[in-house]
Structure formats: C-alpha cells, structure tokens
Length: 234
Ligand code: URA
Image 1 (spheres, rainbow, N blue to C red):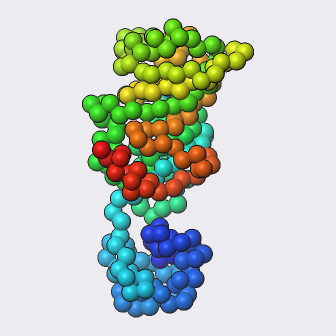
Image 2 (image 1 turned 180 degrees about the vertical axis):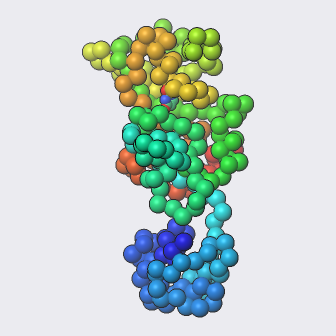
Image 3 (image 1 turned 60 degrees about the vertical axis):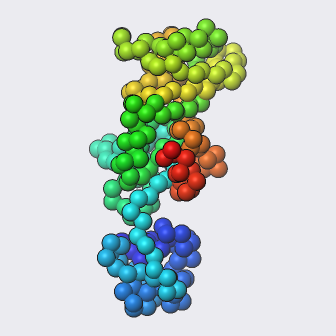
C-alpha cells in the first residue's frame, strides 16, 4: 500500500495534506525518514511513525455509504459496478453488510468485520432496518394494519410485524416509512406487491441505531464514528 494512502486513511488529512507531511520529513518508515509519498509500505510489518508517534494499523474498518442506484451490493460482479468500487481503501477484504437491490439507494455499511456483519444480519437478532419508500397507489390505514399483522410473501412466508408509517399521499402515490426486522430477498417490494402496490423508489435510512448521514451525497461515504459503532454493537 502507498504510504500517502495509509496515512490519509489513518486520519492525517487529505492525500494532498499527507503528501506535504511526508515532504516535510515528518514521516518515518522503519526508523528512516521518508520524503517520497509514492513509497509502498507493508501495513502489517513496517513501523510507520508520524512525528515520532507510532501509527497502529487498523485491523477493522467501518464505513457508512450512501449507495446510489446502479451499483450491486457485492464485492465482485461481471456486469455492474459494485459498492466496493466506490470505496477508496486499502483493506483487501471489505464487503457490504447485507444487500440493497441494484435500484435501492441509501445506507449500506461497508466493513471487513465479519463478526459485526454476522451480528447485524443474523435473523435471530431481529435487527431493525428503516426505509423511506415512494409507492404507486394510496397506502391506507388498512395496509398499516396488515403490515403489523404480518404480510405473506413468496406464497407462504409470513413476515414478522412491520411498522408502516404514511408520510404523505397525493394523486396516485404515497410516501411512507417502513421498519422491518428481517431481511428477505426483495422483502419490501414483495410486501407491497402482496397488497397490490408497487415500490417506485426505495432508500434505506437507518439500520439499528445507525442513521444515514444526510450530508453524504449518493456514492459518498464516511467512517462510522466510535460512538455510532459502539451503539451498533450493542
Ligand atoms: N427490500 C427490498 O425490496 N429491496 C431492498 O433493496 C431492500 C429491502
């Protein structure tokens, strides 16, 4: 991995700011001052210091991505770009926590922490996920009640209770928020289909306590803060 990238990802500023740190002689690798930013380092074995302070290599990283449509929630794909293509990071083992459909936008956690992913995705944990959706048709209080009772999808699968909140209805469309506690394939689209309505737009806005940072434009991401991570792990 390039030294400038290593430092940028450990919070020493933008790639440009980091290059300037290196040029000014603040950075050493294995006790030798390095003034060339293109130098490659081995983050697992090299001793990298800034201003004589050792920089510990971070084993696990956690990002919140505002997923745009058109990207698949996978690490590799033959046809479409993947959400991992959006992340400029040196960790080779990053993956998305769960899946959003190719046309779904919003909150996706990207990490290399398999344990956390398991905790969040395990059906036994009933982890809450909240989506904003635009629906073709008028969503009614009867629909809210049906979602609460448990919608049947895939012919015979009875979904757990879901909380549907009607935000607005106009002409032949509705805006809603829906909270589910499981993650079946195309679950929300199928739940609406089973009540004869179509999802026109879907965006995940929250997963457990983690709320999508609205300052992130589509395709942008940021580190999950220590406090956010602490709450995610509860
Ligand atoms: N439910 C869906 O139908 N699609 C998603 O992307 C997420 C939940």
